[in-house]
Length: 415
Ligand code: ATP
Ligand code: MG
Image (cartoon, rainbow, N blue to C red; front, top):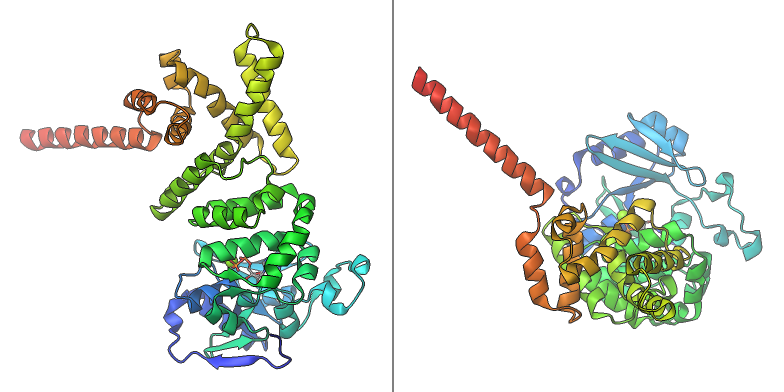
């Protein structure tokens, strides 16, 4: 549903204390400078659903240069779309000028060239350039009013992800929106509007043309933000993961287990490693490739070298789809190659000294859980594995504290 006049809903019980104080100040300064200021996007969606917003984005009619003048400690970032980052303590607040999607100028697709001048727009245009109706709600903090141009409030109530404008067109403009649709469906437990689902089916091949760093970032947000299990489910139901990352083996029990683990770690505030998750996705491809190389080269070939070759081949293949930095590639190579030593209980001392040993044992455990190796092997290594670095640090610190406290006692005694 779209409207020329927005629907405005008063949120009488909205508590201004639920947003960070510096944000209230940012909005006040923009208004004092003669401009509008609204919270927009994911933070309003999450607030209305009773979830805690990840971050707070502001939209304004002030141009970036003006915003910078009005706000202390504000910097212009970005070239194509100039945004303002205002630093307040440890937090950065983003302030963006209203802009419009080039498509809303009714120009043919091949003429939609974006120049900074023609991207600025009014609030209505800014709403229509956004991806889904639930992501295009604005909140006026002073008036406590939600402004809805695109039927987002109704879709929030109906728990549905609906595209703003024809889904096919919007996905052709930016194929990443298909992954975003899956992400929001998974994160919020919403259903996808039928038009969105069918447009995904006809346009998912376009994901092959998206830049690799963007794909990596989207996959990271999908799988490492606490809703990996449901994201994996939605992505496989839509047959979408294969278009982004053909290397994964569909419905692999190991990937599912890795997602469960990653959600648990997210919930308990642990660090999550993207490289480890990609390793679990690439593992079967590596095992298959190794088998092919072993068959080709025969039993007498140097198996260590074959393993490295298999891993390089797999990383090479995946490079076409996601960009993994050198460190991530090195990490994956190490934990794959260590698997053989772990399986054979080889070079125990040297293996235990390897800086990636914990991650390698972790992968071994995942393989055991999915029935690939004997679980007793995991216990054997776990009993021997070194303590985590932080544990070791903590232990050192507590030893030091213990020594200090003893020497204090001694001093006290001597007094
Ligand atoms: P999250 O809570 O996961 O951060 P979000 O909705 O805030 O979700 P962001 O990626 O932070 O997502 O983007 C902020 C807002 O910018 C979105 O709510 C949406 O309105 C708009 N947006 C982001 N990416 C796109 C896109 N590819 N196409 C159109 N609009 C987009
Ligand atoms: Mg956000």
